[in-house]
Amino acid sequence: MKPKYIVGIVIVLVFIAFAAINLSKSLTPYVSLTEAKKSKKVVQVKGQRVAGSENFDMEKKIFSFKMTDDKGEQFEVVYHGVKPANLEQAEEIVVIGRYTQGLFEAEQLLVKCPSKYQAEGVDV
Image 1 (cartoon, rainbow, N blue to C red):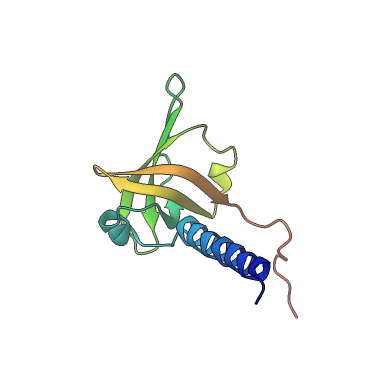
Image 2: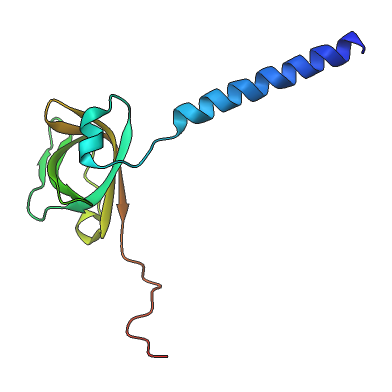
């Protein structure tokens, strides 16, 4: 085999290995609050916001609220950023971050709102 083919194959294999490692690092699993408490990694927790629990510090730009996960466990979420405009209409919230010192420190908030395209009361 010619040396330039060997070099080409090695470059392709290094690129594939690099891509696989970075892909595995970027995947964030969905977990329950119990699992988030045990994990040291960034995780995603899905649930509903507790109505009336929101707090926003305008000076520090810290938004906090209480949330209940799918198993019914309630916890405090702290997010360094602006409150999502559609939070009140949200059917479901996904928080991405880490659980530390009794709080879930969210790096991202994903808000799932009801679809305006769902049919209401359609009888077939």
